[in-house]
Length: 127
Image (cartoon, rainbow, N blue to C red):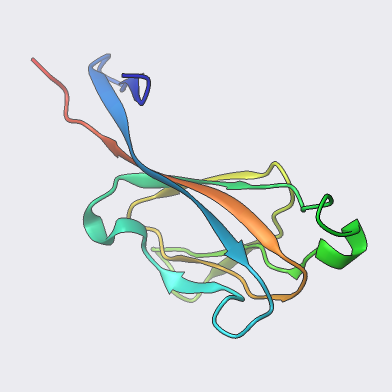
């Protein structure tokens, strides 16, 4: 299966990574579509996620029309609940997010923002 990748941990024990779900998200300035507010991915059923910022659509309209303003990702440090870390993501940027990290896709105010999201699970080592 091409969705499985082997991972070696510090003990040189082999683990397998399985892709659970892949989807594309779209954010627009329309009510209810601007952001995905503070959450943890997968409600404990995933080990992590990978978010890839996709290019701005320059084929359906001029770049200036579809270019988004705002957006990015915000993370909250689990050790210091008050610390917010903001990343201004652009096309091609990748974020790997651990299963227990609170985060959000920040609101956009103009244009359309697209992202590819992959949820994955890491299996326990086999003897």
